[in-house]
Length: 373
Length: 140
Image (cartoon, rainbow over all chains, first blue to last red; front, side, top):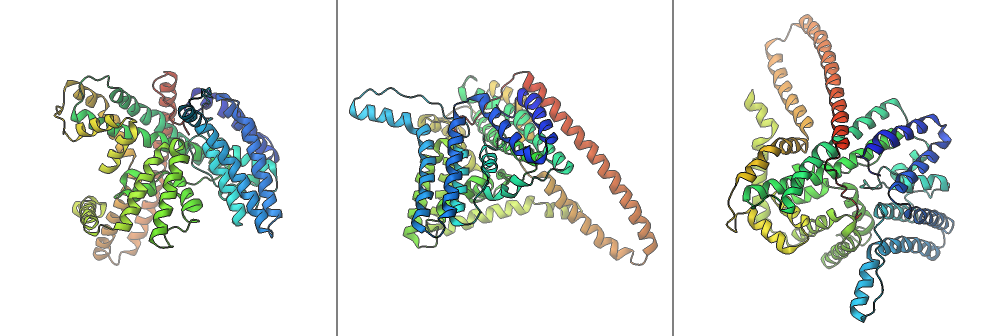
């Protein structure tokens, strides 16, 4: 099921909300879980058992880590067990066919392809599970004692399709005690509607234009048309993606939870570094906190920093490649940024910076204000 | 921003050749003509939505607020210079201003609610119409 469909907007959501607000506090999570399952099952039912198994696994490992807090090797064992299983499943879905076909190619065997479609949400689910288990291992969050609450966290349907990535620490209190109020309801509703508008009214329309231009059903390609095309594509991606995030954040607010923001007007960025800080913020911070910094980040000298960048780059290539296709791109940006930091082309940077500051100042509101008055 | 657009081209096509062709067309390197009737037609039909999109992707509200703030500051500075000792008048003015502000808030609320209702109606209409509604996240 998708947010921008009549079924979701006029059947699923109203019924779900009604039940959600009627039932006593204790059962609200149950309503969430059941509706999440319905939400997933609408598209395909096969992923639900896997999701359940994974949830049990994370929960169990989390508790084991907690129990063996003093025993470092055991602790680490459970961490890697859980991380391993999670990644295995992700890789299975993403690369099983790819691996089979390469084996076929090399050995001349003829193993039939599995042709498994990637279940929706598997990547975001993995990201969430990993953030939970790593945080428990580090001791930055307490491990969840109730499976009921943990299941609510992993299945949470608003964000599972297109983010934002919700870390356990952002919602741990709200899993137990939701901040349901009329204010939050109306705020959430507004946010949801803005997201819906972004997706349906803007993204779909410019997307239709891009579709025409991309497939080449316009006749001869011209300079003007290519620019219109790429601008419409940029707008489509931004409004589609951020619209989904807005809808997810809005829904969460209605349910009494706060998600992290995912976009902060990326297109006003003055540099690529800034763009990447404003685009899909929860994913970039995920990679920063769970991979780049644990590896030593940029504090351990140049060779290690280059190594770390390469590792993250390779990982995102495999992990996020299809996951967040949008992000391969980001990683390219990211390597450019870091490359720039390393090589530091001072002159170029200064010049571009000056130009941008000049343009920015010339158009900035302060100046305009002065001119007007 | 230009770099971002170029990278979207790279991202949009899977085929390297296509990327090359598209980019060279963008920068007028392969002798494609600048515009033709089709291009103008699409431009005319979609310019409104593109402009709306561009406007919506910048933080308009905060810019307006910033602008207002500087304006107010300047007005205030002028005001303080001109009428230093008219306290009573200022009080009355304050009350008036408050009422004005309240009125403004109410109109703003009505205005935005109309906006939201419009979003609901328009979105529903275009969804029911079964127009182009792609789902981009199959590969996630």
